[in-house]
Image (tube, rainbow, N blue to C red; front, side, top):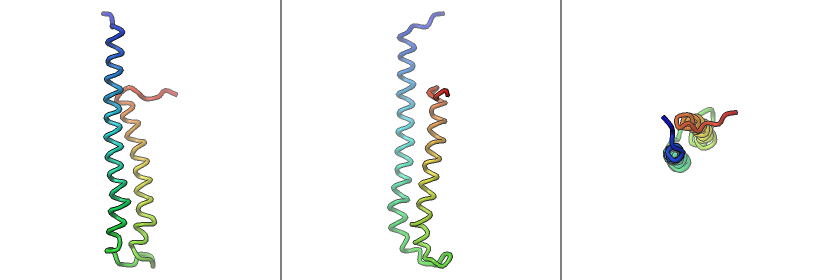
Length: 94
């Protein structure tokens, strides 16, 4: 059985389009989490009025908690993007 060149290019194009849709969904979801942490936590932090290691808890949430969430988002994106690349046969070979 022979494979037509146009069929393989069509499937490659479809695979890339599906991959791009999945990456956009992933990015949009992580951006929503980022926006929630950046704006939601900052606005609600004033209500958290108790001391945590001698400082107001709202300070710790703003100064440390958000940064930790951002680092987790970067790690999650890298992990999920790699899995998407592998699932769509678009992973890079070193």
